[in-house]
Image (cartoon, rainbow over all chains, first blue to last red; front, side, top):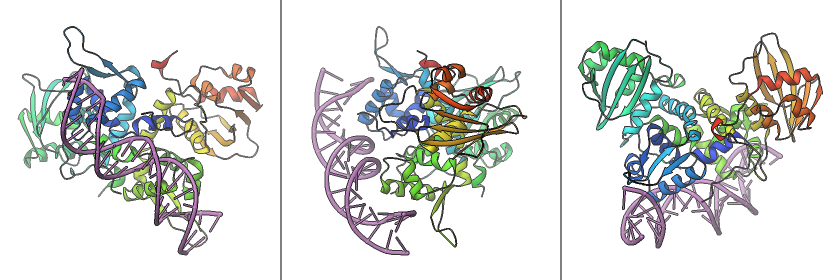
Length: 222
Length: 222
DNA sequence: CTGGATCCTCAACGATACTG
DNA sequence: CAGTATCGTTGAGGATCCAG
């Protein structure tokens, strides 16, 4: 019930008491993409025991990191969202994501992608990539069953779940899109090998590949 | 033995499989300050079971994050150090430290500081603070039993365990130094209230306070 | 003395069933 | 839909012991 403490007056120790709990980082990742209902969290976190999710949500609420909105009026579902304090975890989640992604080559057996994981990954990929202010492009991205869209506008890149109508480019890929983001697979080769399929202007695909970047770890160079 | 996996092809999930293990973040913090022997890690992580430490070190070694140097020749102790891949975790550890420190007010009952926690905290505090290139100042800092020194030189600030001879300023404080780093306690008040004692030029203490900064969380403003 | 390994206990986690 | 309840399994905590 009560979180385990490390007994040290140290920022990292305090953070570890929270994000060191099993499943907590992934719950926070899903909520960082947007508010979620309990059942959506269950669906987006395959394998999580429902009692563990309930416990974590309660702990995060007690810590002031997650806010729970009980159903009222037209809303008839409980909704969980990050508080301001929870949003402040963003840079830490991004840094961890980048580090973990640096060690990712092929998916391990049975590993899946979820809407939230792709959305979060695309957001991280835009972290340090500012695009020209005059780009105004929307992308639909499909990775397996997952559908996400991406908007470049006013010099920013924003990723969100779901598709948009009439995107400028449709991108369909598998996990091999990882190599594209790492820069080890050129946009041309991605199309030539069939690792990625597009429907639209190939020049827009190059924009996509150039604006998004999550390199492999330099220390793990093959 | 084998780490628990989340079954998601996601950077954050991969990171969580490692740093989500109990004690791992604190082990990495201590090693990020410098190479450590097994017994030094035990001493710096009060409460860690020795079998847990041994298991974690083995896991981290298997992951390529920590390297173990067996005793040889004059060296007669096993030494653990971060690998290049382990060093790459630095930004993530810093971001987590900052977030956790933002929520830290008073120490909880029985919470202690360790040499590594103070050293890491001072390093994080200098993260975005570049000091003028012509400053050349050394500080000895004592917080409780813990002794650390800090060197400002060539526009950088470096913190390390232990004391130096003939520092420009000696600083002695308790946990109240946290308020100084947060900016809620002015250097003058810190001295006036006795929260911090110095031996040396008060102007150098102002330099110290101004160069180091770990704010409280804005969303937790009282 | 350092660097662990072993043993036992207990709290946390995991899987599934069930309920307001 | 949003959780509890129950129960089995795993990992952490704590003490002790052992080998180089």
